[in-house]
Length: 348
Ligand code: DNO
Image (cartoon, rainbow, N blue to C red; front, side):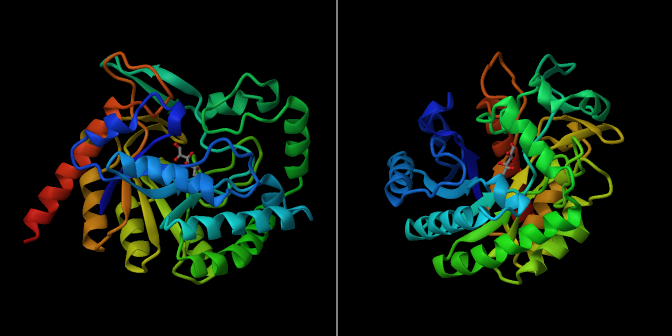
């Protein structure tokens, strides 16, 4: 596997110089952030990003994400234009030699939490999700704005968007995903880009919106929508793993053996009550997931792709983008590398 780190570009407080100094770090996961969702990414901008990263002794391993325009998820006639732009982006990424693209198909909201600075007993802060609180939230009130969400909507846009989704069923969303993949995957094949869908976080419907990339059965359905090695998965332990119904090591082994896992997000979560959880440090003993078994599963299927530590807590007084500070993620990377070394040596 290749150890990678997410970097939010020049606006990120965490610098490429710092990332380079994390032991065992080889690659960067990044994106172009100043192009509106739905427009094509020009090759020059992609090359600029890639060259900057390479000038720091790292490689650009994954684009996370090329966002999918809502009109595609809604299946509106205007999706044609957005899908055509998406294909152009994939072609340009292929030309730049970017191997993996991560994206998601969650309606309107990306990852969702109820609090971003919950104080843990050791004084660090973490992101948490409390189902009861989320049920009481009204996304239209605008009192909720999370770092992963598109902030370009006005309240009016948001209301229209949510209204458009009202009548949409899970099957409608599956059909729109299939339509998108049927057009994009052949281009990914030609361009030698591996598409890696990110699971829904959390993996159940929120705010009355359907969510479908949620469990093993649905991942299986997903990979057969277009049966191509380029139609693969980002397996995120902190997304799928917030319910005991999803056995992460077995999911990694199953889809890894089929060659459909193109990217791994590895982090721990502590399940507190049903449908509620706290993000924990990466260490197995701090959360509900066995991170050793997860890394062993990646190892045993011969995984050679990128892995990244995922959300970290805020520790040592660090402030910054929730989930994406330097220190705890660097500790996470070091722990994952340590597990990997031990697994490798014990297999010799
Ligand atoms: C959260 C991330 C997600 C992920 C997207 C992929 O921290 O894992 O925001 O990048 O869902 O499209």
